[in-house]
Image (cartoon, rainbow, N blue to C red; front, side, top):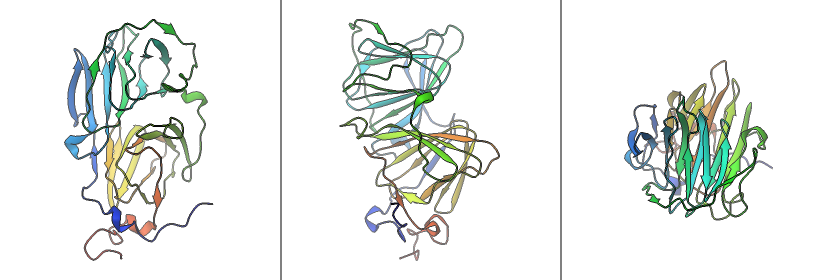
Length: 287
């Protein structure tokens, strides 16, 4: 059964940073390889701990080189076409399909279109991302449409068929990755759809979170502070900040959320904690 909300977050989770909402175009830009651009929207530059997220744009007919990371990576196609390959196993992606690559596995993403760019959401389980380019010495294996990865290696989430659950009124969520789905994974995350009026309860996490608004318009409320977000804008919610998202528009809203923790655990608190007057962390606030 759902547990009753706590009257306030645990004192041990007192935050030392404020939230940051970054619109697309205002992040830090990195050219990963010639012509392939990464806009970092959550990372060390704005105070993130254990997490880097942002948008990668791959021009027509371009490809990343095979590479590895010493941490996990999540890749979600937002627009255009993309093929992801992991040690030679190739997966064609449809919009909102997701690929999760554990640490140490060589992988790449290419854009098979000769006309339009591919835009992907990328999440890395580190605030100090590095990569090592490796030779493409893998035998190519075209995986059939709808293939969902390889046991003990990469996980491929097909958006059309993914299991959904309700995380709040008028919402539909998908878990793409966590330590239960992929033992040993360092982060967790997925997709959330909010119909008009849909919202989550006021809550906190014991780790940082990134939330990227990929469709529609969202309102992010953090201890009474309101942030309007759309068109890929991404919020960094530091550990311990009381927050929730709500769809106050007349159309659907969708997000990709990623936690800098292996299990998607939230601590629900009294709704008053998400208001200015009830902010549990302000001087003279709730005790």
